[in-house]
Image (cartoon, rainbow, N blue to C red; front, side):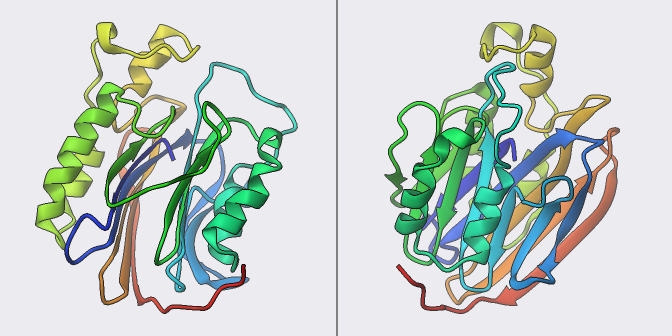
Length: 260
């Protein structure tokens, strides 16, 4: 994921709402969201190269999503797959605090990442860049791109504002999908400096990223109603921003006791 907008206990009927765009190279193989055969409680897309995922949810009200931290070519060639951080949580049983504590001991084995995880009670955020202490987030609206949580990049600021307005339109998905489709490029004077060429800073400044080889491949809307009904809507796109397909899955999530 390269853009995650999340409302946590900020809506009277929907304690969890997530709107997100996944940006990736079009040559990297992946599969749309589905229930995983080896972990049928998990609903997520799948990176077919490394086996992990960028966003997932489970019948046990577990949720996780991540973004990469952009830092201009500072990549470990043999780093662990960041997608495993999401997959292991949503498929597992550890409570969020225990899970993040264990992962903190191996954070240096990954390239830069931001990770959001939640169960029915807590929402946590951690990163292996900047202040690496776990943050437990209270009710509110949060935004994450390819820097730290709520870094006020122009596209994140505008996306958060549109997301906040869209919450009033639930359960209709149109306003969320519209904001995720915004291809407006930010003026050069407002671009961040993340160590990539200016041409790439321009391309990546849009909410919906579009270029020949890299761009937004999926837009996702995830909602969980207070009665436990969870719905995931995912649209996939090609390099010309044409829709390739749509997945819409709903299930009644349950509370499953977890180990410490």
